[in-house]
Length: 77
Image (cartoon, rainbow, N blue to C red):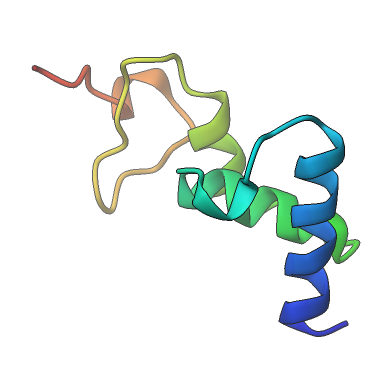
C-alpha cells in the first residue's frame, strides 16, 4: 500500500469520525505514526506506543528509554 493511499484512508477515517478539515488539524507525529501503522496492518513501535501512553504533561527526553515513567520528566512551563 502506498503512503498516499494510507494517508487518504486516514483522512477518510478522521472525516467520518467528525474531525473537521483533518488536513488542517495539528497532530503529534506519534499519533500519525500509530494510525499509519494500524492502517498498514503493522504493529506500533514500542517507543511510539510509550509516548502515546505517557501521562499528559510528560515529555520524552531524546535518547531515553520510554519504558519507565522516570524517563519521562515533567515538562516545565
